Amino acid sequence: GAGVSQSPRYKVAKRGQDVALRCDPISGHVSLFWYQQALGQGPEFLTYFQNEAQLDKSGLPSDRFFAERPEGSVSTLKIQRTQQEDSAVYLCASSSDSYSNQPQHFGDGTRLSIL
Amino acid sequence: GENVEQHPSTLSVQEGDSAVIKCTYSDSASNYFPWYKQELGKGPQLIIDIRSNVGEKKDQRIAVTLNKTAKHFSLHITETQPEDSAVYFCAASIGEEGGADGLTFGKGTHLIIQP
Image 1: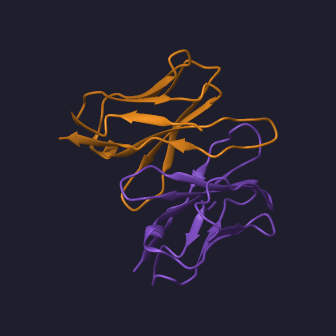
Image 2: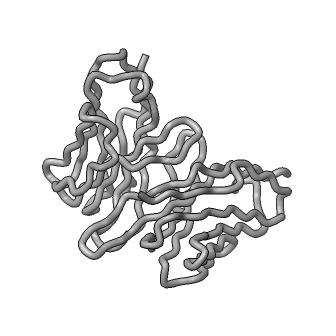
């Protein structure tokens, strides 16, 4: 009965390094979302998967950001050549099906710090 | 795209009193409005949501109202308790058949319950 699980909880990287953040959604959830939350702000939408298909990536800030969900379950958000402005909490959410806005359930996020 | 404004940014109330947080949205096509509570170091937790075919929804001490004409919705917490202290976010999205949608969040309200 676990909720959305994200790892690592904290990640420190030097500017220019690549990072990979993992999300394990609630078992059986079809939809998976990634959000970025800057300090003191609300989450901002990055990308959305329905099963393995990435249906919306309009929120990804640059081509350095890449997300995948190859088997329709676990998802990875990858950031290449990290920059200081990438420092934020990255949140993953899942919902039970693909129809009309079912509730999204969030993990506790990965706090990324770029030095 | 959608824009969600949230007020106030900080709200301090005496324990036992009521708290009201207000949000406005810009896109008349939005039809789903969830509210989240976020505690320090945790992900957002869904506390209540409302769809555009409903004007009000209650769950124990929490209620949400929606005015589609004015494009605003509000969260009402009655009989506040110390454990209600947290940051609260409103959000909006456009649901479509066959596809979910990313949420657009407000900037958050820091609710402080004074003992």
